[in-house]
Structures are given as structure tokens and as C-alpha cells.
Length: 90
Image (cartoon, rainbow, N blue to C red):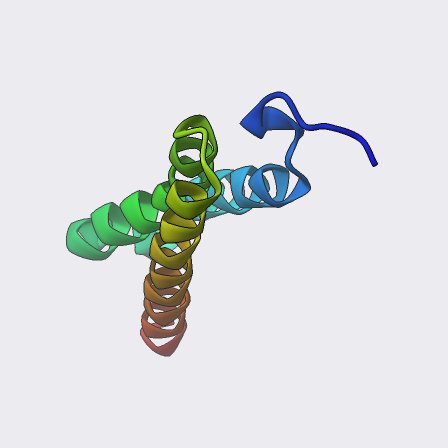
């Protein structure tokens, strides 16, 4: 089994980075860019997903990493809820 030396090697971090990038592209277009409150929330929560993976990994321990996985799950739920809210607003 390979050893991972940095959070950038984590496949899940790479996916979170893609999600954050995709959301950023979406909020730059159309009517969505006029809802400043929602833009701020969804941009921050999607960025928190990748940031929590990184911070947890950098803490250097399994217990700390697990705690940040829990925080990440919360950020995923928040982002998903905001995506649904945006969808319902067209």
C-alpha cells in the first residue's frame, strides 16, 4: 500500500477541489451572480470541503483527521443544501 505524503495526493481532496472550482464557475454566470448572500455561502462552504481535508491531514494524527472528516461531512451537507436552494430559485 502506498504512503500518502501530502493532502494534494488524496483523491477525495482532488474531487473537492473540482467541486469548488465548478461552483465558482457557476456563480460567475447568469442571474445567480446577483444573489450575493447565497454566492458567499456556497463559495465558502464548497471551499471548506477541500480545506477541511487539507487541515485534517496536516494535523498529523488519525484522531485529528477523523474530526476534520466530520467537519467536512457538515460542509458537504451545507453545500448540497445551498445547491438545492439555488436550483429552486432557478
